[in-house]
Every structure is written in structure tokens, then in C-alpha cells.
Amino acid sequence: MNRSIRWRMVVLFCVTAGVLLGISYAGLYIAFERVVRGQFDRRIREIAAPIIVDLAGDPEDKDVDLLNIPDEYFEVLDTSGAVLQRSRNLPENLPVSAIAGFQTVHLSSIGEIRASVIPFQAGENAWLFVAAASTREVAEALAALRRFALLLLPASLLLTAAVFGFYSNQLLARIDAVVRQLRQFVSDASHELRTPLAVLHGETELLLMRPRTGEEYRTAARVMDSELKKLNRIVDGLFTLSMADAGQLRFAAGAALASARPARLKPRTLGGRRTNA
Image (tube, rainbow, N blue to C red; front, top):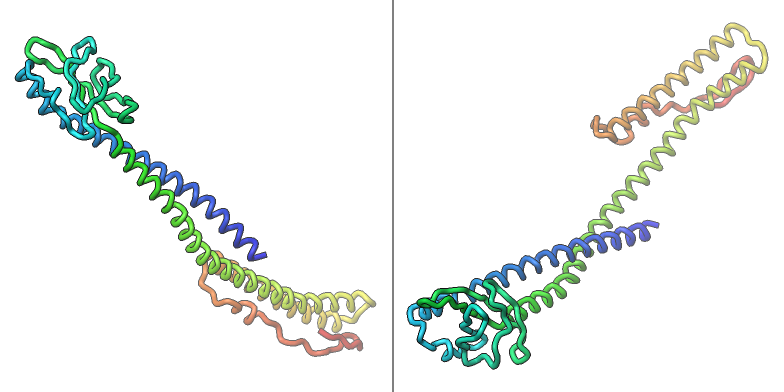
């Protein structure tokens, strides 16, 4: 029974922890991807800035046609989108639109490319400068993070499950001890209550069997009063224990029953008849 409960708790914890860890890693991945792509876009802008300054100062210069930087590509467009200059490492024109901003395009010979279209003024001409770079480094960084997460997620789940299993065993052991103490307490309380109740029941039966003398009634009343006082002490002890269990009173376990435990009753006679407690 306890083992079944323990395994259910471990499975439930593992499922819950797995979902939470999965959500956490997904959030981390999204945040990391946003940061990496943002830095990549800023780097493209920083690469484009000095080239634009050079073109604006000398529009007739064809320096862009001579550029051959690995994984970085450049074009100069007019406002209609026609290519005026193109870096040497571009095998074909970039399929970008003549709209300012970032665009992601794909070339069969290169793969995915991130491009920034920047309008600028070159003398009397309004041109567009396209600075682009391969997203291969970004893709590799994100793939590395995914592989790391796929390895770390099961390891984290196993570690948390092991820690939870260890502490759940201690918790269940304490619960078992509390349940055993509670059962013993109920057994002891039942035993202590049974004795005075049996005496009271016997006295009332004897009194009802036949008419009694005044002295016999007084004797029975004294016995019943003594047993009722014992019952009252036991009930008071139980009440005190309940207060201690609720944290309202510091109380030593078993003190109530120890103080309220009745002495063994000795055989006595009532109206010539022998009775036992």
C-alpha cells in the first residue's frame, strides 16, 4: 500500500516536474533565440554603416563589386529594385524587395540569408544598400542549445525525481509513524473508556434487577460518581491532546491518559451480590 502510494507520488511529481521543466526550457530557448537573432541583426547594421558612408561620399566608386567577405553579401539597388552593384561572392541577385528593413531570403547555393535593406542618399541619387549574411552561425548556435536541452532535461528530471523519492520516503515513514501512534492512541483510549463504562453498566443493571434499600442506592451512586469522574478526567485528557495536536498547546504525548488511567477495580458486593469491574 505504502509502496503503491509512493510510486504514484513519484510518477505524479515526475510528470509535473517534466512539464514545468519543458516549459522553462522552451521559454529559455525562445529568449535565447530572440537575443541571438537581435545581435545578428545589429551586427549586419554595423557592417553596413561604413560601406554606406563610403558610397555616399563617392557614388561613382564601384567598391561593392570588389567585396568578397566570407558569409557576408552586399548589393546596391535603385528605388525600383534594380541591382546597381553586387559583391563578388554573390552568385545571383538577392531576392529582396525594395522595402527598408530586415528580410530573410533563401538562395539555393548559400542557404538562408538575413538581409537588411537600408535607404541612403548618394549625391542626387536615392539608393538602397543591402547588407546580408548567412544565418548558418545562428542556426548552429540554436541547434547546440537544443541538443544541450535534450540532454539536460532528462538529467534534471532524473535528479529531481531522485531527490523527491528520497524525501518522500522520509515523509511517508513519518506519516506511517504518526498513523501507528494514532491507532495506538485510539486503542488505548477505547480500553480506558471501556472500563468505567462497563462498571456503570453493571451498576445500573444491578439497581434495575429488583428494589434496593437506601444504603444500596447510596453505595451504587458513589460508585457511579467515581466512575463518572474518571470518565471526565479521560475526556479532559483527550481534549487537551486535541489542543496540543492543533498546535494550541505544548503537551507531552500520553500524559492525559497516564494521569487519567483508573486504578484496577477490586471485587465488591452490592446487595449481597459479588460484582467485578
